[in-house]
Image: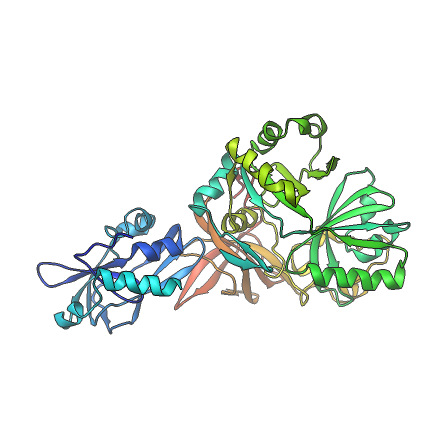
Length: 129
Length: 342
């Protein structure tokens, strides 16, 4: 599996990209989209919403199931990807390009403490057994 | 892979939406070997089925003709839905759901012991079943099995014929044309591979569910069960209450007119309808029994049980997570033969 090495990951299958200005961009991983299958609806969080770590903040729905997306760290939502309203299938075709929301983290150290690509891969492998 | 009535079955082989469209636009095949095939043989089998089933087997006058029916408890609750084929006056074939098969057979044997002890009820675990569905399904079957064409090209919908050890029925669970083919399990992998060689794609349980939902066909255990009757489940058309014929459940159905009904829903807002979501109407509350995204309509659709009085055209509210979303009550089926009906 190819999880980009420049990203951080959560146990609940979100990926996190740190931008130059310290904000973060969040989506769901290749593994998560593969488990869910064809995506048909995305409900992103409202801009300005304050989130706690691991708080449910978005929903992705495939034909077969609905899944919650969790805040990887505490912070404030600063953007939501409105393209996914009309093209939720972008998550299937390009999971690491189709971001769901952006946040300004309360503490940047919370982000650096998340899993790296190899730790995440080990986590995925452990869930498979 | 998921467990389905004790069978390991694939939800999807690739993209579920692509599989759905493959069946609507061309031809797809389903391994439905989990469906259980039963034969009922002996003198008086028709009279017994006339009493056992809510639909009337006297509609079956031509050998090979099939009938969809519910099998009811005395309470009127649905034990299972099934297809019964009339073959000869001393042989009827029945296909039941996998998860309910053991319970169905026990019930049939219990009733036969009381009313028709001469009948022999046999189960056919040695038969596999492959459904080939879609506008090009029959052509593909004829290419894969040239010997079948002569016998099945004039076969009417809801009819079946025997071909050696195979049993070919022009039936299905998708709203498309096609066949359901029973074949000895030992021959099934070769037949499956031959169909694949003709361009018939395998279709998983996920697309099977969205196809049947668009076609407005009930799923046992979801849209009906032993605690609701056929009249609350959109199956009034399969229940014959007018004739003098007695059948199990009739007394209860006549004594307890239905207070709820099964309706179709089309979601007007963005989101996805799912089973067990609550419905709020001006006549009271109801519940979604089956809901999903319709790949043909590119909207979310559902079957829901709501109080009497709710009518096609009404707008109702569906509770989805922390929101109330608007949905329109519609007549179903939603899709037939590749065409949207709403």
